[in-house]
Amino acid sequence: MTDQPGSDTITITLAAKGDGQAAATLGALAISDQTPRLQAPLSSLIDAIDNHGGRLPLPYGHGHCLTARSGNTIIGMLYATPPIRWLQSQPSNQRARLTQALVEIELLAVAEPHRNRGTATALLEAAEHTARTAGTHLALAKIRTGAFPTMRWYRRRGYTIAAQGEPIIFRTCQRPCSAPRM
Image (cartoon, rainbow, N blue to C red; front, top):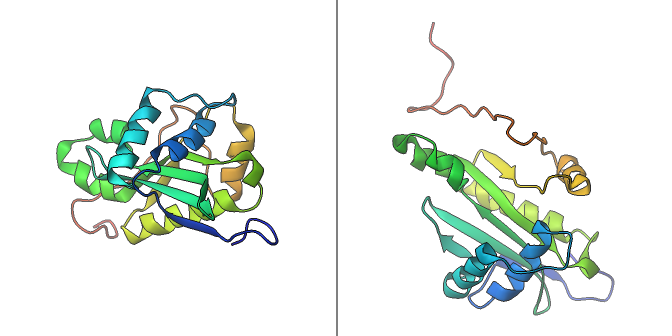
């Protein structure tokens, strides 16, 4: 993938140790329409990426921070985790299985000058590939309320938009799922 004719190729990789500030600054774009301002959770993300790189230890599994680079410059980021708050509400004997089955895209952002060139799509496709390889069956994306262009973008990529608080039914089985017994 190239950003534009004559420019460097865009590469998608796990964030490296030391990428925290650049990744979190971009991540702040996903949270606010205003000029990015780093909040406490993003400060924690900076520290985690700076110390661990793009594979971040969490209460249930790991989070992953992917970066899109043009040359040495980070121009996009995606941060995906198990849906921790939701997992906490599930029976403890099901959490490990659910952690593997679900991924939540917490943040996805591309720097303004690099938008509409396929960078976000490349980040999303890389995250989906990584999740499928790990056995994930369902990806959820957090979207800011009222972010209609973002909602349309996800819809064009096959996502279904659920209203805030709308339930999602996800069937789990203790043993391999099969047809119901008669």
